[in-house]
Every structure is written in structure tokens, then in C-alpha cells.
Length: 130
Length: 129
View 1 (cartoon, chains in turn blue, yellow):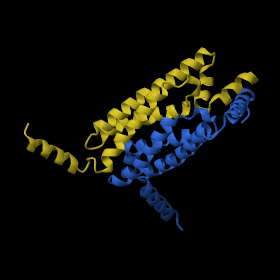
View 2 (tube, each protein chain N blue to C red):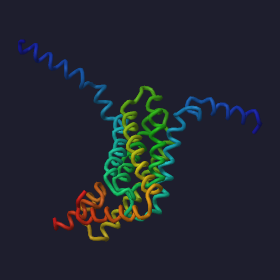
View 3 (cartoon, rainbow over the protein chains, first blue to last red):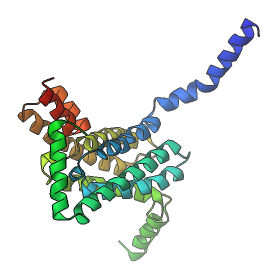
């Protein structure tokens, strides 16, 4: 393939993906709104590795409900916002896992088991092991 | 105000394409649940607050407050709920920062505590780094 043709092919490839519409989308809150929302499931995934007493029951319940409705909302707006939908799908999954851990620790663990768990987490904090 | 105009206003609200029969109404409304949950968290002991969660809520609330004014039409309800979410999450982060710095943490240790919890922060202290 001759050089001019290669250069032309490269240029058309770039033009296909880097055009005014794409740049406009990337630099607006229509993109950064959903992207910033990813911070919530990422934080929840971080928290899955932490002491279950850190989990706030009311906040977890609120986030589960909120993400469920926003998945529907993301598909109702025009145009459909699949980025927002994906974000809330991940968050829904992460928050349900947190909710399970919260309920298990709070309601389905005996007092003796709680003491053992608390002691275990304190030990981990002291030694820095995970 | 006559009963017919009251009835008309309600029918208009009920039939609206962003009214309570649609998800466009309930999505912002349910976000208030995050604000009230944040309020109830203020009663929790400071060492049991999740720094990572509040940091993510703060950042998303800031951006969505801005977003609510960008969309057409402007959604003041969504802007207000995100503003309050910003206040509650910011307050919680302030509690954590105050608590950790009063216990002798440096700024970098505070940041790692917020992101990773107690483990990493304590690990740094015990190893003398």
C-alpha cells in the first residue's frame, strides 16, 4: 500500500472517532455526570473488603432503591444513556452485596460470633494484614 | 380558587410527561433518600463512617448539581437534592478529617485512610514510614 493511501486511511480512522460531536460529548456534563457516578460503586467495592460495621444500613438501602430507579431512568431519557445504566447496574450489584453483609452481621450473627469478628478485625487493623 | 381550576391543575400535573406516573419524577425524588440516609449517618460514631463512600457521594453531587442546570429544561428539584447531598457528604468528610488529624495523622495518611480505611493508615504508622 502506498504511503499516501496509508496516510489517508489513518486520517479517515481518526476522523471517524475523533470528531466534533465526540469531543463535544466528552467535554460536557452529559458524559461526566455518569462518569462521576461510577465513584459510588467503586467506593462500595472498596468497602466490600472492610469491616462490616462500617456499612450504614439506611445509606445502603437508599442506594439500592436509587440505583434501581435510575436504571429505568437511564433508558427512559432521549437519547438512551447506556453509560448511566451500566453505572447503576454495577452499583445495584455492589450495594446488594453490602446489604447482605450488613444484614448478616447485624441480624444473623450471635453475640459470641460478633465478638469474635470484632476481635478479628481489630487484630487485622493492628497488624496491617488483610 | 375554584374547584375546577384545582382539578385542572392536578390533572395537568398527573398527565405531565414528567409527572408522578413517569420515572422522570421518581428518579430525582428517590435521590432524596440518599440525603436523609446521610442525615441519619451523622449520629454514627466517626470511626465507623466510610470515607470512600462519602467522597464518591460528594464528587457525584457536585457534578450533578451542575448537570441539572445544563439539561433542558433545567431541573431545580434535581439540583436541590444534589446540593443537599453535597452538604451532608462534605460534613461527614469533615468529621473524618478532624478526627484523624486530631489523632496525629499527616495529610497523606488522612487521604489513605479515607480511601482504604484503617488498615493502610495503621500499617504506615506501625512500620514507621
